Image (cartoon, rainbow, N blue to C red; front, side, top):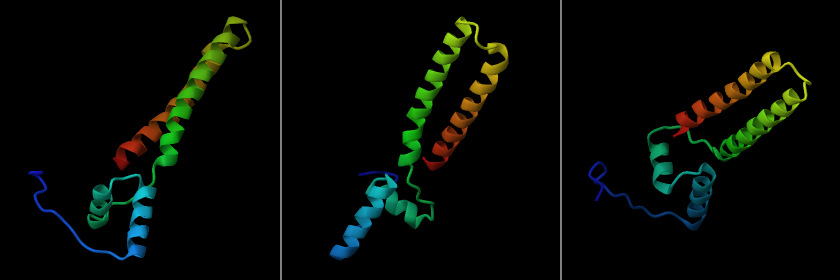
Length: 106
């Protein structure tokens, strides 16, 4: 038994209600318990699947950018002291926004 939540909840629903509930739970990416508690407590239920897919892509893009800039710099094509900090700053800003948003949802 969970000491912080000693009460157990059980109720009946129709087949249609069950399917709708399961669909909404699945779309939310939450467990059934977390989904129902979010509804009861008035918390916003947001699907984060798209955002969670963006984070690894952003990491890959950052790595690709670093590799590209390194090769261009080795060949003397760009002034890295001017271009690199600006571009990496933009990537970091997007990363920070995503991280802050994900932390709010957890």
